[in-house]
Length: 440
Ligand code: SAM
Image 1: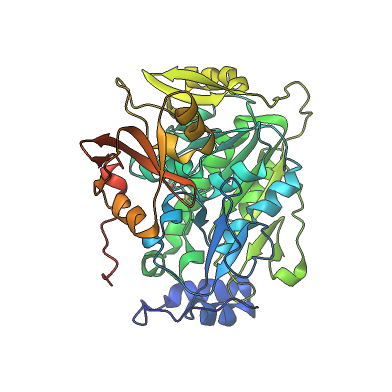
Image 2: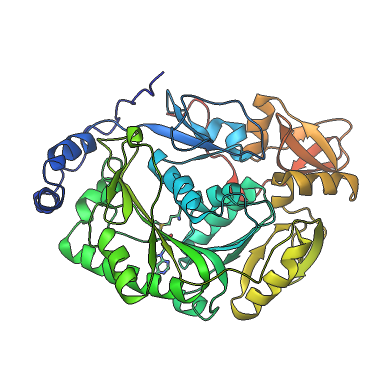
């Protein structure tokens, strides 16, 4: 079954700029016209399933990602309770090529310390968490404070408890010299690969934008390199077709940082093409948007640290109780001493009181602990009640008492407190559904 391409609702989209088309005719040659046609065509929708929150396959598989699926129709994700429970992440398919890049590093299934330097809103962080071993810790950094909230929410929804969130400049992170086994630089870029779905990406393009992005990317690469352990690997990614931001950046890292290129394996039938030392995804050649991936190795040996797998433990940060992997404590404290953590693991209670934290409903292990050790109950909701809960309504129940975790299809959604024959809603106000089923 081949994935249906959805008719594009946005028929009056901004035209592709002639200056941009001229630039791509120069760099892509014969491919350019097919690319322009694809960018004016309909796009596909895809999701990546959360392996920790079992779910049936939703549609035809994304060939290069075991957990990726195309959808025949674009549903209203907002009105799907399991979307809020973190059963899947809506992510365009080319971004899922990250799996092949991590494959090239040899770290799939390994317990390592990783950094996602430009992490919000968390698409690649959540994927990385699934690809690495269950003992791994992923530090998810985002410089832009406005984007931290969505990063945090998506990590909590993913429910692994194996991440730490920071918000520091790359220069500050570079002070953690030779620290991480793997660094992902999903760099801010000119966004040409988003031109099919995003008019702003079409309008904003100028050669100056490419130059400015390229300069920022070089700083990010150099800083990422500094905090990478000898023997470790750096994954560089963009969502643009500009060679100045893609293969030239890898060449620069090879020439100036001493990086060694690593080939990313791929099946030519998938449609990605090798460009310089990396892999380029072009929307007219595969079912996905534009993206570029490269992998670089830092010369040296990774001997010395091995992260074991172990039990969870309680850790306190600024008065907030967190569930973390016991063997992450030293790593977290070490990083926190240089770069303050915004959060770590899965918070169990909100600061200063004994109110269950929303994240503790979304992490299956934390939810179990809240039920077995903290006396919380669990209330399974049907579809209609789940949507009413997610809108922030109180739900009537004669027997409501104490704290309960509201679940749908056995997946935690959030907390409610039983008072006088009803469940008072503790789903965070900022997360509530504001859309009504009849809204268009
Ligand atoms: N990795 C994310 C994902 O998969 O969901 C997408 C990351 S997006 C391509 C690039 C991110 O880099 C943005 O969130 C942006 O705020 C951040 N950023 C922008 N300028 C930066 C800088 N100078 N240093 C670090 N991050 C920056």
